[in-house]
Amino acid sequence: MDKEAIEKIKLAGKITAQVRDYGATLIKKDASMVEVLDKVEEKIKELGGKPAFPAQISCNHIAAHYCPEDDDRTIFTNQLVSLDVGVHVDGYIGDTAKTIDLSGKYGDLIKAAEDALDSALKILKSGSTLGEIGGAIQDAIQKYNFAPVRNLSGHGLGRYEIHTKPSIPNFANGDNTQIKPGMVFAIEPFASTGAGIVQDSGIPTVFELRAKKPVRNPITRQVLKEIEAYEGLPFTTRWLTRKFGAKAKLALREMEQLGMLHMHPPLADRDKGMVSQTEHTVLIDADGNIIVTTK
Image (cartoon, rainbow, N blue to C red; front, side):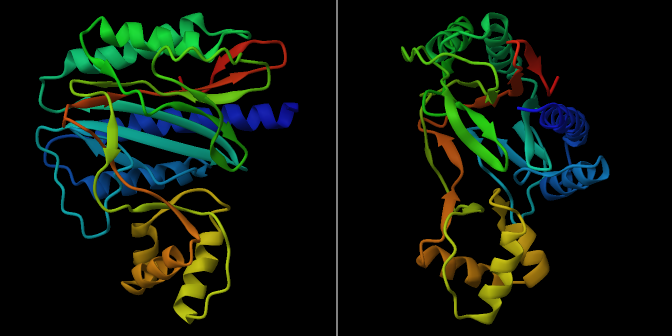
């Protein structure tokens, strides 16, 4: 990893952290979810980055991947709200998340995820194993009598790739794979009052283009051209319907039928337990130094 790449990773992380903190100030009672996400994505561009994925807000028992459509009328009241933000600079990615409690009931749940992230960072070094990191996360969350979400994990970050190796577990899974210099990854604890297992819940609005194939419909070709501009990174329905109207959904349906898309439906706790999330991006440089880019 050359010096230029490292500086771009650091810049992406810096912008991501600024946008996360800005977005958190917007999440308040009576605010519109769609308007908050629009402002978050506008801030990304204003600060010189591009979305690495659609900014997402998941509430209550929804753990991840909720992204509203343009006509969504969700207004914040007393929800537990997780904001997940990703930014890229020339394909180099920062990924971070924060949970805000509008109800005043879930302070310990938020603290559990935050302590888990801190615990993982404290033991992190070149040579740490993935299982050790997962164990630190699990122990911190269970001290609060909550469950780590076992089938969600942190992940490697490649250039224009939001999910690569290694997979960073949220529990002690015994994986002896070692952290090595040159790795860039997100550590992403989730704490749940419920099962600690998530499952698909609802209609997907977040997609990735996985395979380009010939399409006949002219509007589908137009939509596909727009999607290709995202350079393989995830996108959301709202971005397309604002440009192409309702025909965008027909185009997505055709691409889905052709096997061109990878879909990310919302993920909810199996027992509808409340879920908190926190996340930082970490770079291990050539000397083994730990650089948290999204602090």
